Image (cartoon, rainbow, N blue to C red; front, top):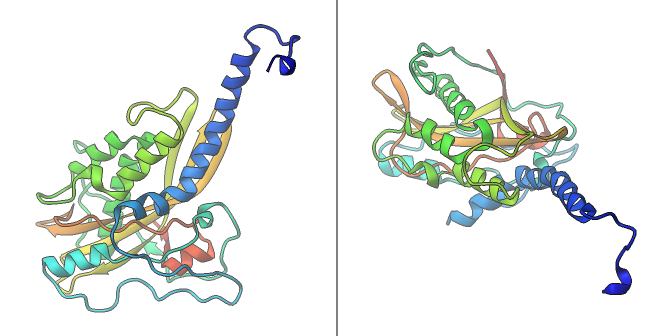
Length: 281
């Protein structure tokens, strides 16, 4: 309306103001995706019903640690383990908040890779649950670089055995696509100038293993940091992958993708309740 126009505004100031609003809002968009994408995006593509939400407080106790019970062996047992929903926690639990005084168990000591040169993802971890976790962590380190779905696919495909879920159909890939769309960025390629996104692993767990020990679903959790020209937001972000021991290596197993990991702030009550344990090297 003409009566609402600011005639004292210099030419072009409206465009500059819109640009500043876009830059300032980008960090908020990223934050919104970081705290909710692991829960909301994945639930849109899975048919399994999540567990009932839980509340956390001073009197709450941690949920039973993942794994332990016999799940059998073979393709049917593997698929059931991979698809089994994990603890459902509020999306805001991924935001930074008070750390827990409890633990889900002793820290996990990570083995070192035997091969780091000439490969996209370091490999050569031992035939153990810790070895499977370490392999997933190295894949996530490489695959989450720049929050680029294409980079994730390259790292994933370099380790996937025939018959594994397509990289683009994994929860991690959908989360990265959703993050970029919400931040109004291209679905692949470099981030906006001045923006960086990094992920640092902090904790992990084994969701479960088949009775024959050749198939394990390992989940890792870490701190995702988005920096948009000095505007920094952080949140907890994790992923689960089905891993199979093939010869002397851990590979992403054939069969369905694993249900997404609970998104919790590392070290919080929610992370402990989900079963995440600290990492040590």
